[in-house]
Image (cartoon, rainbow, N blue to C red):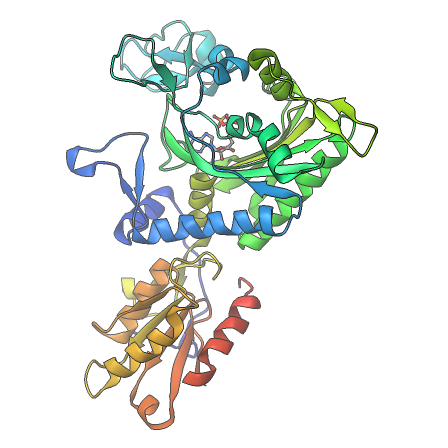
Length: 460
Ligand code: ATP
């Protein structure tokens, strides 16, 4: 199997499909079906060794972007279980519903707003043409019970969004951390929605993770900060290293606006199944804090001590992203198949995940050419030296070409190969995932070379 840049043929692209992504995700330990040995649990997925690393790294990029790079944003980790009144105040008990229809013939269930209007008007099933039931409202919140007796008195919801945990803590944070408006609160955490239709892999699931930032501003300043956050959120995706021409804005029309929103934009990504929402940037006005003030009876006004103790309920600009959905985007965006030889076999092609090195599950793989003659020990020593700084993998089994292919499939940006020359002069082969270029570097310069390559990384 060829793996040198010199022998490489001009690259040719093959189509990226969701089937290919799902298959690679399972084969390489990114994402598994939940409870697969019992036939699987719909709406839930498990993140394997590569998936959890990828998810944690995406979360870290987002967290850094929000808290480290913005002086006026602080973090929070609120509980999933919240007082049930929260969801009355937020409007979720009343409004967090999807329109549901069933097909009487094939028994499939659909969201009415996702069915072609003409078919819905005729009550015709989009799958089998059978008759549809009337549309009924279905609340997406999961209910459970707290306490030993299940008599309805301990009914509690699993939070359907992380945002409310931020609103109910806003005063605590103003007081404990002396925050002055404008300021933001960032949170990453699980949310649960009893989605009617969960398809497209991890795109829409019943259990998922959100990365949420709520920015509190003075009424009247909201339009300015709404524009500012749209720009910030757009630029973030450049840092994540995804293809920017696969992103676009969608502004909510009057009929689409949620009950709390003054104005709303979504960032959409072109997934293999089409353009879909990635995250929302919303001007939520002062709806949320007004409602929590009303329902809790607590004064939630901000007191502006720099302006003669002026009191007001802040407006909120929210940037609400799905972590697991962003992971799906990163998987789809990174996936590439490239022709690297012309022997007429499947081996002519390599599958390569072109992750940005900042999010790649493994940054460096260390590969001794042979196990024997002290090469394995030498390689282990080199790996040891890199561990503190980078996530590493070690593989000594099989042909080197096969080992490179495996690293390409998990998206490892750098491979370091130790061979007999290493024993003589201390140099190793550094192989770059994207170009497959190989250079010899002295092992003492490896760390500096890696650091520079990561800093200067640009996707081909
Ligand atoms: P939709 O209209 O598609 O149901 P939404 O507009 O209600 O979604 P938001 O409440 O704005 O979504 O949630 C913010 C973000 O959380 C979304 O942009 C998405 O990335 C993520 N998200 C929402 N619901 C799910 C879900 N069921 N599975 C995975 N991610 C989700």
